[in-house]
Image (cartoon, rainbow, N blue to C red; front, top):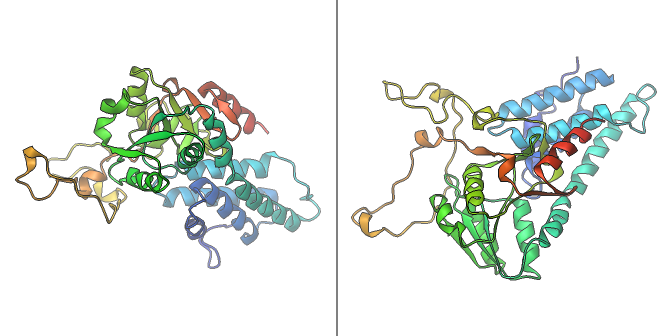
Length: 348
């Protein structure tokens, strides 16, 4: 059996982290590039050994990642390409040549996939009217691409949620403001308050699953529920490499869920399994809020403790019936259309 990971010469997770240093490379593409690199580093001599090695590498990435959902979508896509689709090189004659071809094809796909966001931005442009007021959540490369593209030809204004505890909405705010787009940060708890003022909701994705549902930063699901109640369209933007063969029925079916999330303290004052929970580092810099009249006697705002943060989810699942459309590089799809596309993509 070919060993792929944790050899002296190659660490797939370290390679994965290196690829992520490029801001254009998302976790699924970093996973594809890491597996492509792993092909030429492996000592596999047959297709069976190579597929086993790739599966081992994917498991290693999943095991060492805090949120493996999106990277796992990339792993599935690349392994399906290796196993299901014909290749120019003949494995029976020159397996080394086949490995080189697979590695080159993986790199070629990742390079081309960066342009998928441009295609999605162009598709979304037709749904953004002049003077549109848009609500978005947290931080998403593809959503930023769509908003910046729309700003070239249309007047838009954007509300963005703060997205606690990491505060990624502030990163979106800074980018949009620097580009000259009117933008206001909204408290996560004020989504219902602002919903009547927006034309539609636009969010990115960690993954789009087999049901046509969406996995994204926590808070997306409640935003979709509120948008549905207010009769406002809820649009998701997702590159096709984030389409994932996963079928969660609830929040608790997500791979990121563990018994510690939302658990109550034990009598000893500590929740069960807390020592095993992954640590999350808060952003180094946060914007100080002015004290409200009710709290003016306090010099600092209260914040959640590290123990409280790790007991909360990082992503959530949005049901397909709450999603109006999914914009992808393969077209504008209904949630049902995503299911059909996934079946065809992995059918060979």
